[in-house]
Image 1 (spheres, rainbow, N blue to C red):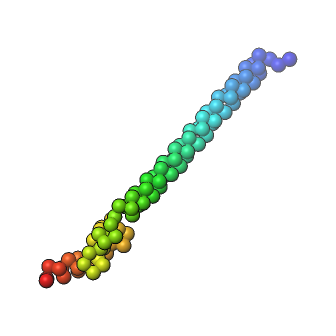
Image 2: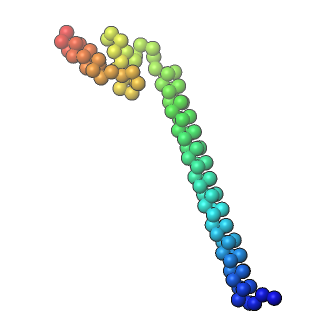
Image 3: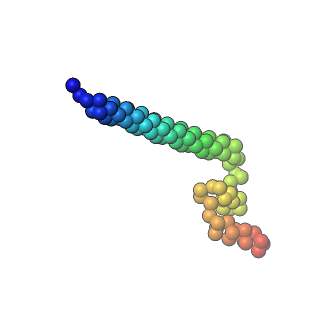
Length: 95
């Protein structure tokens, strides 16, 4: 039969292992939850961006994006050219 010191060591190791396993499992669960929250946030962000683009496309009149020779005056437009806009503005002032 094993002595009581050996049994104490065995049960101590067992409980330490169970405690470590619980700690690791909670860590994995926390990482998984954080990754899920990040994925959900990125998905919502992409939906919002897409909805904003569709709203802008739907509610912007065809001729209001450009004025005076086809120069885009909206600084939020991806095709906005600052130099072209300033040149057109200076040309209007010279007239």
